[in-house]
Each structure stands twice: as C-alpha cells, then as structure tokens.
Image (cartoon, rainbow, N blue to C red; front, side):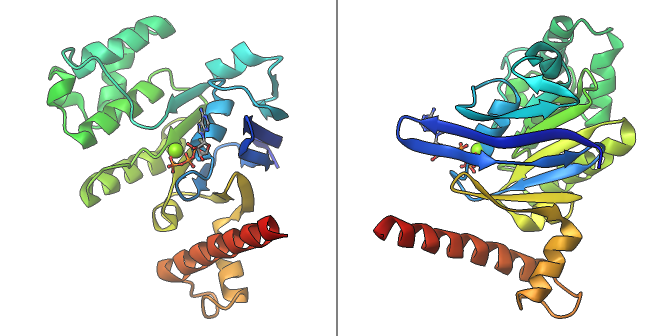
Length: 260
Ligand SMILES: Nc1ncnc2c1ncn2[C@@H]1O[C@H](COP(=O)(O)OP(=O)(O)OP(=O)(O)O)[C@@H](O)[C@H]1O
Ligand SMILES: [Mg+2]
C-alpha cells in the first residue's frame, strides 16, 4: 500500500485527560479518508497534530515520507487545511481574503481566480465576506485550503452548519478533488451517512481511540457479519445503526473498566 499519512500510536494528553489515545492511522495516497466520531472523540485534536498546530505527547507520524517533527517544515508545506469554522476578514471581499493567503504562499495571481472557480464562488468573489452565507463561507474556506493545490487536504467538518443542498454541493466538490488534481483528502464528520457518500476508507474514533479502520466495503461486510444488515445489502441506516452500536458498546466497556 502506498500510504501518504501514517500515524504510530499518536497520543495527546492534557494534564490528566487523554484526548487522543495511541491512534495508528493509515491514509492511502489519492484516497478520501473519512474520520468519523462523536463530539469530543479527538478528531480535531488529531488533525491539529497532523498540521503542527499542537504537539503530540506520544507517538509519531509520517507525511509523504517525511517524519514529524524532524521534517516539520517540508511536511507543513504539503498540507492545506480547514479546521473547524474558518475565519476571514469580514470587510474584505472573498477575492481579497484569498489574495492574502496567495501572497503568503508566494503563488501567482491567477491562483485566486482558479480557486474561486473551483469552489463555485467566481461570481461572488467581489462581495465582502461578511455578506457571504454560511455555505459560501465554507466554500471560501475550502478555496483557501486548495489555493496552493497542496497534495494533502485536511478538512475538519467542512459541511458543519450547512443545509442539505449546501452539504450536497460541498460533498460533490470534495468527491471531485482527487480527480481534479493529485491530492489526498482527510475529512472529519459526525455522520457516517455523510462520510459513506465520499470516503474510500474510514476511521472511527471514540474517546480518543480508533475503534475501526478499513475500507467502506469492509465496514459494510462487518455490518452484515454483526447482523446489522442482510447479505451485502447494507443500507445507510444499517451502517449508521452499527456505528452507533459500536460507540455505545465502547462507552459501556469504558464505564465497566472505570468501575473495576
Ligand atoms: N486545549 C485543550 N485542553 C484540554 N482539553 C482539550 C483541549 N482541546 C481539546 N480538548 C479535549 O479533547 C477532547 C477531544 O476534543 P476534539 O476537539 O479533538 O474532539 P472532536 O472529535 O473534534 O469533537 P467535535 O466533533 O465536537 O468537534 C475533548 O474532550 C476536548 O474537551
Ligand atoms: Mg472537532
């Protein structure tokens, strides 16, 4: 397998609380990897570590052959990101906001128009960001992440707060990315039904621990084997049931361990 990101026992501990607990992930080059878990599971913390925004307290990771922290600078150049809700200069237009990022990255001027075009914001580029709808802001955030065409995109809940048509739009855009240029996408979400429509591989996180990692097909097979779905016909609802049951079982096991 050609992995572009691997983590090895990656851990983040805050005082006496473990936010990310010995997570070993394997993200294939050119794939969309869905990172799934309930509130507080540790998704954003894991992504922040991969982006060098917070330091691991244990374990290590590799990005495109580079080791963190030894190759920190070269790793960070390869990653574009969108963490939680992106913020912009409200009085500047979408185009001006992107132009700031473009200058920092030292990209040619046409990069801004290309990115606006790519996310479907070309006709709104001259509107102040404060007049953007939530969906437009999310798209502007994606445009910022995409600007330098980084080989890796880390997108933390990019559909957060969007209405169904906004979700549909962003989802289609994300799905199209590895076809548009040679990139790998790591995307987080709370909802398996959403991840299922985009991801090639899935990692399920709960209380900082990776409960499952594998392809969507493997997850579907598991649903059949565990009795959540009938012979190869696992529906979205079946998968969601299995996901919730996995989380419930893990939570119950944790409580049991805590009592002992
Ligand atoms: N700076 C911090 N100090 C202490 N605890 C933190 C800090 N940042 C995050 N945590 C804790 O780590 C855990 C994981 O948080 P994280 O934001 O990574 O979860 P998440 O999976 O992204 O959740 P959500 O789906 O709500 O965004 C939470 O319990 C959170 O309270
Ligand atoms: Mg989060």
